[in-house]
Length: 321
Ligand code: DGY
Image (cartoon, rainbow, N blue to C red):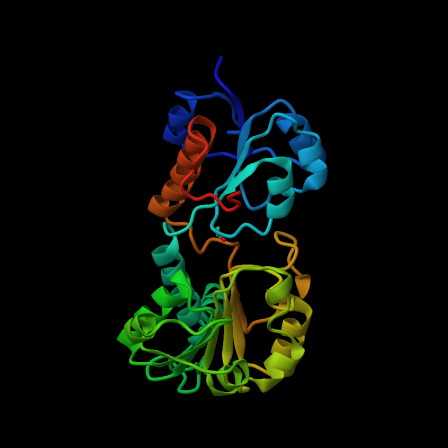
C-alpha cells in the first residue's frame, strides 16, 4: 500500500502525477481554503504533506496527526512551520531554497522602479482619464541610477538584488546579523555598515531577511524616522518584518517618500490604510511568481516529500536530528 499524502493547495498537474507514482495522493485542485480544523482533519491519517505558507503547522496540529513523517513547504520562508514542534513530533520539515532567488530578485527591482518612478500612481491617473497634457512637474520621482541602495540581509536573494544594482551604477551598502565573506561582498559590490548608517544613507532600503521573533518589526517607527524623507522602502521578504501601522503613518506624514510592498502583516487581510495611499505600490505576495519558478518550487517540494518518505533524507531538511 502506498503512503497517504495531502497536497493542501492547487499545484501543477505534472507535480501531482509525479507524486502519484509514490503515494496515495489527496489533492486540492479546486484550491479550497483550509482552516486549521479542516487541515488537521485532512492530515490526521496522512504520512506526508505538501503545504504552502498559508498553512500553519504547530504542536496542536501535529498532536492530531500520529502518522505524519514529513511536511514539505512550497516556499523558502518557513515561519508558518514550528520547526521545534516538528522535531519533537519526529516530523521532517523541508523548504525550497535556491530555486526562487533570481525571480524574487527581479521582482524586487520591479518594486524599486515602480515605487521610485511612481508607476502605479501614474497609471491609475491615466486610466482614470485625468491626463490632459504633458507637464514638466508631473509625477516627479526618485532617480534609481547612481542612488544608494541599502540592503537588509545579504543572503541569496539580497545578493541577487545587489548584483542587479551594478547595472544602475549604484552605491550598495548592506547590514546583516553577520558580515558576509569578502568573496560575497566583492561579487555584490556591497559595503557592510551598521543598521543606523544604512537607514540614514540609503535612498532605497530593501529587506531580504527571514521572519522570526528576532526580525519582528525590524523596521518600525524609529527606523523610518532615521531614513531620508526622500527615501523609499521595499519589502519582498515577509510580513511582520515591517511594522505596517508605523509604515502607514510614515507614508502619510512624509517621514519617507514611498514604499513598494509584496508582503504584509496578516496577509491577505492587509491593513486597509495602505489602500488609501498613493505613495505605495502593492502586490499580492507574487515576487517568486514566474511560471518557471513556481513550477520549480512545487517540484522541489514534491522531491523533498518523495525523498523524505522513501529514504528519510530529503535534500532540504530543516530539522536534522
Ligand atoms: C517564499 O518562498 O518564502 C516566498 O515568499 C513564496 O513566494
